[in-house]
Length: 144
Image 1 (spheres, rainbow, N blue to C red):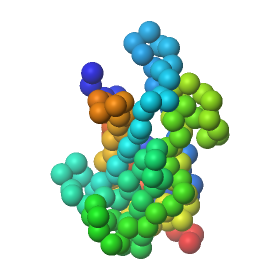
Image 2: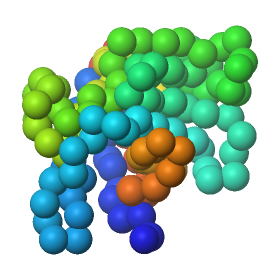
Image 3: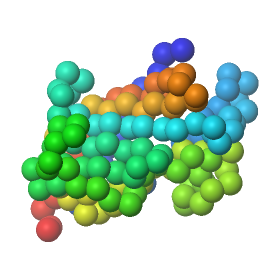
Image 4: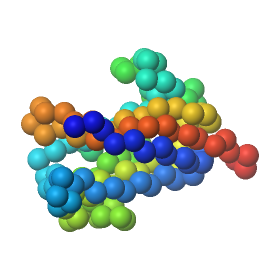
């Protein structure tokens, strides 16, 4: 099945919180207990460098003061935010099908302003489904 398209608009230097519910074709929420999730943001779909790497197991890695990094590169900065599976709209566990994505303010202040691209994938025992993709548009911060 083709991934849904959703464009995200957010502000540089502000905490980012995004919640969605993963459902089957009948509209029933799917239990994500056996899943992992990953979301990456890049300047373009062909760019090797990452702006953000967000996961359900490893939190958020951002580009630090450089704004971007290479996988395995040294300029990345990690934080405690990330993706909570079966998460509620406030990040608590226990909401079947909920994906709660959060990026802390310290990471977001280093995300470069501009129109970037992202996608969000779910992995269930090696079966990977891209469920959402689109623009990741960051408005620049004036007050720092």
